[in-house]
Length: 177
Image (cartoon, one colour):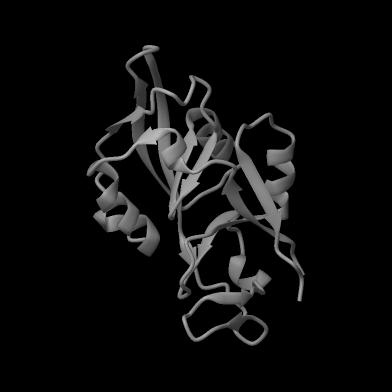
């Protein structure tokens, strides 16, 4: 049985980015993993003036995964496929900061072992068991057909992430059945 991790961030996106109408459409498309509703045009996002100038490499909030250019390159170097990338230009007027970030929305796959997982009456996961054979070559993914915005990674990708000096990434192991 493979080992999997839930990928999360230490900070809410709202700690760094000033929201507006820009992300409302993107949020819903991310939560539903509906790539067809996400424009490919770059979007400018303003960093909150009191957030400092050092941004995390992974920001995840309400289903929206935003990654630094460095983390995007890492995913590509590790042959993580089936990811929708959308460019965000992150700016901060006060400091003159301007950096490229990306929405990094993984594909939702049917990998939930329904016989061993426990789903409550609200369609929420109480116990998660992932089917290795259904995951196949995916290293960075969401789980289809359940009410969760979470992103999961394989142990292989987990080990590679640990070797890097990324900021703001939290990886929680999925308990085995």
